[in-house]
Amino acid sequence: MAHDRMTVLAAMMDQGVIPVFYHPDVEVCKNVIQACADGGAKCIEFTNRGDFASQVFLDVARHFAQVDKSVIMGVGSVVDAPTAGIYIANGAKFVVGPLLNPDVAKVCNRRKIPYSPGCGTMSEIGFAEELGCEIVKIFPGGLVGGPEFVKSVMAPCPWTRIMPTGGVDASEESLRKWFGAGVVCVGIGSNLVTKTLLDAKDYKGIETKVRDTIALIRSIRGK
Image (cartoon, rainbow, N blue to C red; front, side):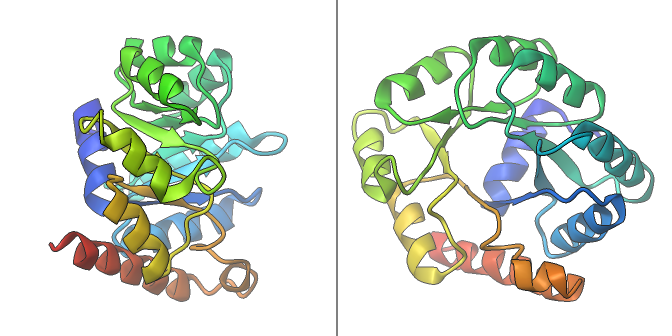
């Protein structure tokens, strides 16, 4: 299954929530990511954390390239161009960062890979869009102004596509506020793939939570 730039962006916006996850154990990653995909979240953000994270990503990406080509693996916590290049070479189909780096944007654009940089001001969002970023991440979402910040951005710039991460949870109250403000999708980490579910290796529970969250977002959107 081909995952070009437009296909990936459409998938991110359609599913509405991007699970954000990292674990140093390859087998745990395989199980969690498969659970997310089975729950309807085919796009998963693997965060670049810890030593040899890129090797873990490579092993997991190779696995899904063989067993489930519908899975779209992206990488998060990318702050520099060399790191972006490593993950793209290892199969990343989208790149997310906590900050905006023009060099990362250039690498991603050269390879037609979506880049969602972390922004905290109107000027950063505008600069990211000038660099070709279709979906801009606001981070940390809850601390830069939350849903009210999104509303303030969307008023003069209704074309902006925003994905908050940080300060978002899987509750109806939280999701209604963010989507009501105009976001196109949200990134959720430990509030979705919870420590309790992970410690118990309750992969079916993860699948159910992801499925329920996507259903809730569709309901909020009126789909």
